[in-house]
Amino acid sequence: MTFSDIQPYLESPGAVLLAAYLTVSLVSLRTGGNGRRFPELAAKAIGQKLNRPGHSSSQLAGSSVMLIIITIVLAAVALAALHVIFPNDALLDYLILILIIDVRGTMKAAGKTEAALRAGNLELARREAGPILLRETGRLSEMGLAKACSESVILSTGELTVAPAFWYMLGSVFGSGIDFAVISFLFIVMGRAFNQKLPGNAVFGKYFGAMLRGAVSLPDFFLTLSLLMMKNGLSAVKYGLSCARTAHPCPSTGILLSAMGKTLDCRLGGPRFYEGSSDVYRFPAAGGSNNPDASYIGMFRRKMTILTASMAVILCLITEGALLLGIGGGSAKPRVNGSEYDPPKVITIPGSDFESEINRGESIVPESGNKGSSEKHNGRKDEKKPGSSPVFSNTDDFHPV
Figure 1 (cartoon, rainbow, N blue to C red):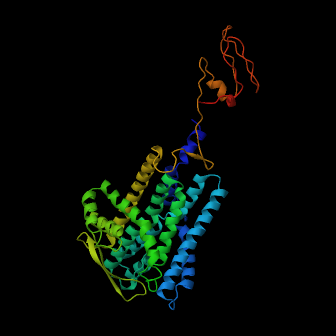
Figure 2: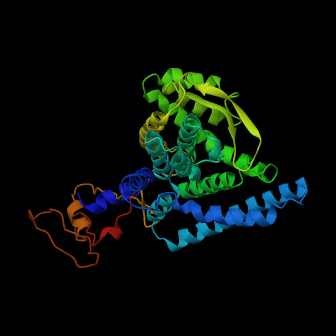
Figure 3: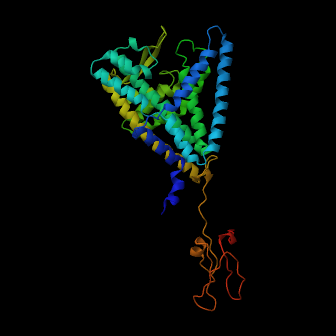
């Protein structure tokens, strides 16, 4: 077996996703999640122009819808251009995925926060947690900071790690998986940039919030179901489903937070202050009975790492199985240089065995009269002799029925 024999299978959607996930998880690169920095900065810069205090609610809503449409159109044009520039779809998918899948960013910041809390340095812990939290960290106690970081680890894993992988694999069943992944990624980035909890985004961020919820609902639910592989997972999932409408405004988020808290018997939810706002947002407590501390941050980090790795493998198996069964509009055929790969067909000629000669571009005259007699022909078709089988000069002369 040569590399060319296995290359088509290495370029399947499942193999590409696993390669990208392993790259951003294990290799010491600063690529993971960096793909969202430019869209975030661009969205916020444009938002400052469109989201002005003097505008009416209808103007703000119209501006947000216009920005959404422009974003989708620009993304579609950019993806179409990239498909033309890159002759190999698998390579393009891989390069984009390692930019948009963020496995280490939130985990790293949460780890630094945990270390600072264990050292008893609350001020340092607040600074370390700032980049991954929307909350007013200056008001958070040690317990509040541990709870906020634990929730951020859970939700950010669903939004930044699981969602791009989920939509990539689902999109691969129905067509181009990377298109699905990029569009959902942009929805999440813009939803986070214009979060309705932040001051001034109550109206302008309404549709962006809907986009975010639409992009993460199925991935969050799938992530919750992955708890079934763990001890006490069934009871945790049942509990999460019972909290769907009470734990959080977004049902799938409430299910995920409640189920995860239940697995570690940790109480999540409760009141919180968001940055720049004096309003208190009150969420019902959900999960377990223990108040979180620094140790729970580490426990949630480890559990989410195991879940996302397991879920990536399961997604690949489900998607490849769906492609093999012909479900959706995708194809189970591997891709080579952007096109579907058809393995060579073996053609059998009655009364003769031409397989080895066909593969070498040669032809022979089968046995007829003189035992073992054969003749090579250089790129031409010989005349048929009485009592002999037809002679072919190359594989172009064979047409399978």
